[in-house]
Amino acid sequence: MPKTLPGKWSIGSIIAFAVLIAAFRLLVAWGQRGGETFFSNLVLTIPMLLAGASGVLAFTSGLVSVIINKERSVLVFVAILIGLFILLFILGEMMFPH
Image (cartoon, rainbow, N blue to C red; front, side, top):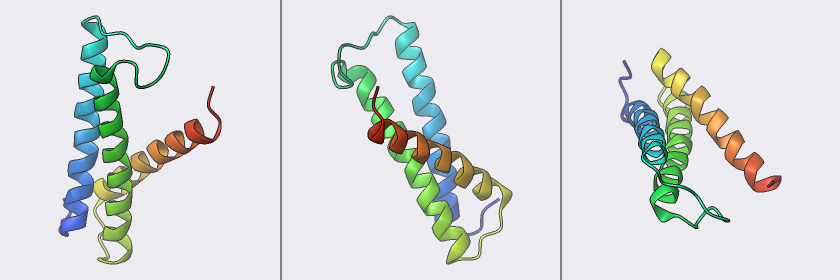
């Protein structure tokens, strides 16, 4: 378990990411559908924006915890890795939209 405050924030943020993704999937399963743009259905947009923000927060707070505070928890390293994938996905979607 992480000992530093940024390490705990990293773990909490990655848990929030998982909960928000599950909420998004439940909303879709209950019949919510998107529209032409990302912001067409705010009921689906808000959980996804919050999930992306929490993933990036997990990455940044995990890096701060490891680099500055010398955190060595395996959970923090896993949160950094997952957050990095989320950040790369978001950047890829912004640079190369489809």
